[in-house]
Picture 1 (tube, rainbow, N blue to C red):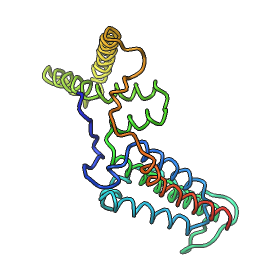
Picture 2: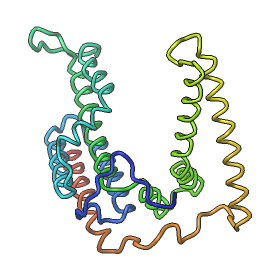
Picture 3: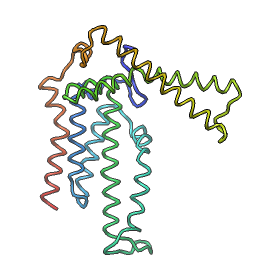
Picture 4: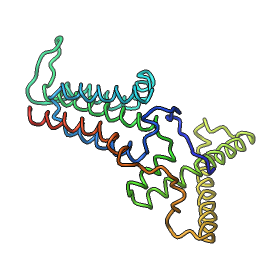
Length: 256
């Protein structure tokens, strides 16, 4: 439980992006996303520049386009909504392949798809190059509120325990003839969820009391963060992408 927990999106490698401290990558991703969101939707060339930046970072991180695109399918519901906007939008309309489409809806749909896709790809690159534990460490180094980082830390450490507990409870139900696929057995399923919640609550109380008895004062010890805080040189390297993105966004605002 004290080892570094890797999530399903993490891709182990020794690339230059992997070696950057987590706080640098988190800050770069957030600033890049802000630049993308601030870009006027009609400046199409700017989004091409952002896509090129993402492609360069992905190449440096040794993350293939197939892996990125397959995981980016999570935004599919938003893409479907964006495709509906040209038909539902009001205002000036234009005929495309025999269809009457709203100009504002077309731009709105493009805005959602372009900015959403770039944000998802940037987040996937962060997840692919940073373990979950390092993400929490990076947030703590960026002075994220302690209560949030500690909740995330405990969730990370005990999520596997709760999943195992839920799996054992399900096996016990099935071995006694219960089959949660049937609607009339929903009551038993709900009772199991309630029992799991009570067990988790009681386990949390025991863990908290054990930590307090060992000197826990509401803040994780500094040793938990480990060594490797970002140096000035690493911050400069990590600032390249957001600076280029900010330059593109500034030029797009001026030229609109």
